[in-house]
Amino acid sequence: MDKPDRLPYGLVQIMGYSCITIFLVLAIIVIFIKRILSKNWEKHRCNNFVIPLTSFIKPEINAQENETYCFKKDHQPIMEEITFNKLTTKIEDTQKDQELLAEKISESEGKIQNVQKKTDAEVSVFYKAFERLKNINFYILKKIQNFFLKIGAIIWTIYFQLITQINIVLIQIASLYKMLSVMNSLAIIIAAIGIAFAFPPAAILSAIILAILIDINVTAKAAEQKAYCCFSETSLFLTQQGIKKIKDIKLGSFLDYLRENQVLGIVELKSHEPNIKVFDLTEDNKTSMFVTGDHLIYTNKSWKSIEEYAKSNKKTIPYKYTDTLISLVTTNNLLVSPNYYFKDYEETNHPGTQMKISEFVMNYLNPTEKLHYLKELYEIGEIANCLSPETKVLMEDNTYKKIKDIKIHDITSNGIVFGIYKCIGNKQYWFKLTDTENSFLASKVICKKKTDTLWKKIYNQSQIKHDPNFEFDIGYHLITETHTIQLENDYIIRDFIETNDDFTQSQIEKYVRNSIIYKF
Image (cartoon, rainbow, N blue to C red; front, side, top):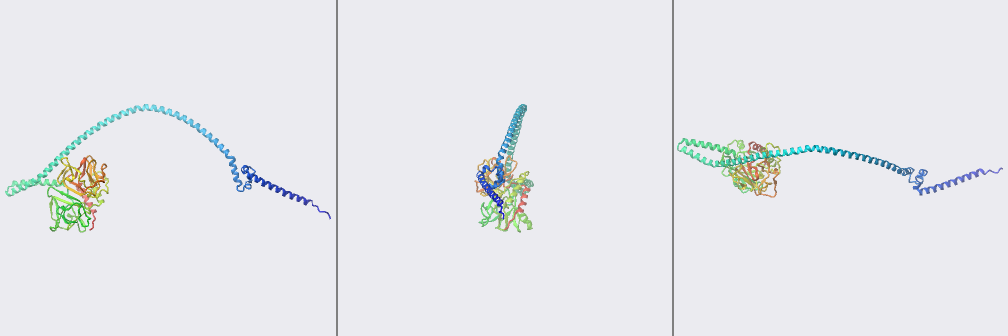
């Protein structure tokens, strides 16, 4: 038997050991290289042979991230250098362009200066001509102004002469009133002589004198203020102290036991003779009541005038004529007699109604104006239609008199005084007249300067301000034949009535009647 051949097996063994040895050597080399590269990673990481092996060497970094890092590291400085060079070139080009532009601007400024010099030379001629024309116009305007000032002086002279003549006429009127009583007596005496002695000429003369007196009285009556909402002085009313004549009721007193209805104001009017018609509502000697025909009385659950009351009851109410009337302004606008309920002089103090009344009056006084800028805060009724006691009024003899000292039938520069109004003075807003010591006007007063064309409420006068530091016990106002009163510093105000224009009074009466709502 042949001996087996072991050569192939030996070769296979040798090759197997050789492969294992080579593999171990390569593994050792790879581990050694990995350690070297890992230790000096920043130095070798961008090697082209290392980049694919990045995840093997540094498991936390992948090959793409390492490639991106290496690309930035190698190329960014180059790009920055290229960019810097391009920017530098652009800046240099821009500087050259700016230098060229500056040269052109300098040339343009030179040209502009030359043009400006030529223009100044040409314009100076026109400027001198303009200055000369301006001086000529100023001279002409001064001449025109002086001309109109002379005309104004002439007009003012004529105006004051006219005022003087008016004052003379008013004095003559006052004298005429004094003469009327003498003529009345004379007519009666002559008529008596004619009847007693059957002397016809005396009767004829008496008739002529009476005709003249009637004409004069009618004229005087038209000039006097219409008596609105008033009573004769003997009319009786219920008060906290019992039944009193209206003439004995004092300002500030109360008309009921609850002290809710206080007398805030008293109006007194007097004519020169008994020519004011009052209706007699007296039912017995203890209930004297005489009232004007337009006064409101509560009947059949509504307010009616005395004349309407007579018609609705289909009866004739007796009447008489008196020369003295009195009325009151109260807290709740109510007057109670033993047998009747009446409205007071004001009839209603509702702010909205008072605003509308003032609007009617201002429309009459300033017919061309649409806005009067009325303020509800100040339109609080007749309690605010008065003057402070020391306010000075210009009289017919060109002297000033304190309003508290003026009596009925005194003559002011604006006519005879027919009535006086007194009110409580601590419930108003007071406005002080400019450049006066003690002239204060309550908020409802209408006034203007002599030279003004428009009437304004006192609170709308820009030069007059509300003064909260003053308060007066009693306020006063007047009723004059012209419904105007002149104060210090050429201020003119409307009187207590403000106007007796029939249309305006009719508007007010209709509006008030429609707005009155009162429940007992």
